Image (cartoon, rainbow, N blue to C red; front, side, top):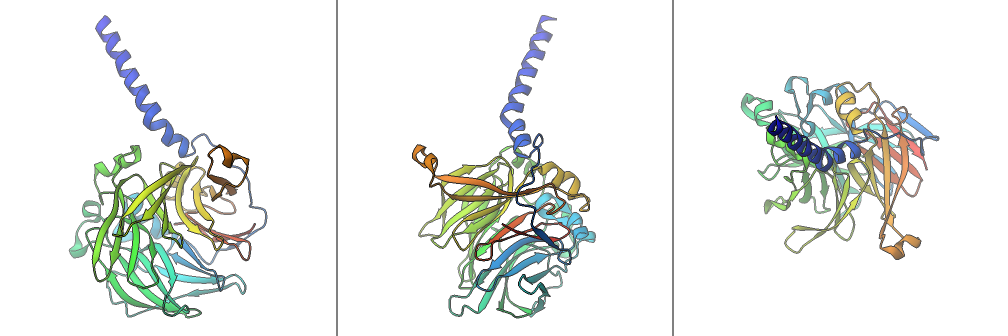
Length: 387
């Protein structure tokens, strides 16, 4: 009897240790016990014509927003990042749209010279003015294609690639330039492109396309990565053995910000001469994170999840169920705390229970016009708030 009691005590001690070290931090970052506040959501408008737009990019000179969109229902079936691999429910007819806030004009861009029979299933996106002609824009898109030859998607995963298009300011068309396929493009999530129209960095949000081991990433298994590709030189891993990689943003000085989604941390990386990346700092936050964007003032804005469990287990299954949203702002700390080693200041600028902005996976700030744009993978509308 004594041995049994000792064994049970040992089991409980191990279980308690696992809970404290691994499960409790995940539950806390995920917002299980968090009360959602109302911050910055009093002066907002909605654009319900634009639905399920996972990534937003602002063209600051014109104030035109570019959006990578789908339909909420197809997102519930086909979103490889969260293990939804029902090919029969996917649209593969996703699109890039523009929204001009000044005129409220929405334009769904027509695709030219794109001959793939597997269509477009969009996720991450970047829109970059050409270095040779600022009125020409390169559009880099993560495309989660169905697997070839009728293979089972739950067994082999998506056959993801990067599509590079070009357009011009004010145009209603996207012209396809090339498809980039490579084994380094494992589970691409978000992307930042260069003005040459030929090179880009992207995040892999898992180390494996499918399988049980992939699920261990939630507990801290470091298998995610950032890849670098050049259309002439191919692709390579810029950095590996990271945790929870999701959104990525690039500053003008080639400083990169990569979001650790389940870990709720902002990783700062520096580009090296060989195009590899090195982590220089990690900034913790109190919540799960998704996409990030840098505004024209050089400020980093991040989409955060006040309650990631509502998002993952309710909203992604039924997009009509709202999920709370938030926007975080990272700036250099110039206040008194900077003297005590607090280099950065992290502010929660927006938070909402989902009635104004539901399940936002991207937030973009127009610093010139004082507008905050919010949208999400399967969100019902584009939300625009004056801040």
